[in-house]
Length: 134
Image 1: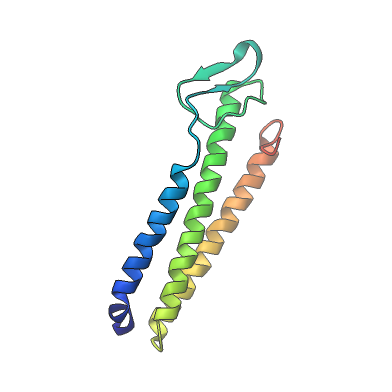
Image 2: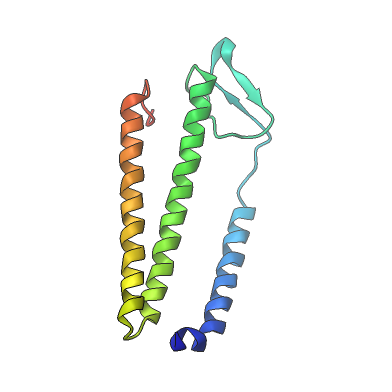
């Protein structure tokens, strides 16, 4: 804990610089006004981009695939952030075995969560007609 207090100002400044850099990256991503979910006569045009790619005939399946792609990115960001935080905890733990165990446990649970998501994605890919990878 003493190590954390000693480097608290550096950690906070690094965190805000990372947020600033990621915010400037996100600001350069183009935003599309709308998209078409589905194909043919059942196609639905939305006012905002919901992640549909227009390759599936059913608009509901197309929207479902868009949501699953969005959640996949979210899971990836959360897992990476959790592992980075655990790495910082591990390096700041020093000789305190309780803090080391907390950091290792966080890494372990992050990887277990990632594996659960991968298996759930694989099961959905098996169950959904046409698969998620098409």
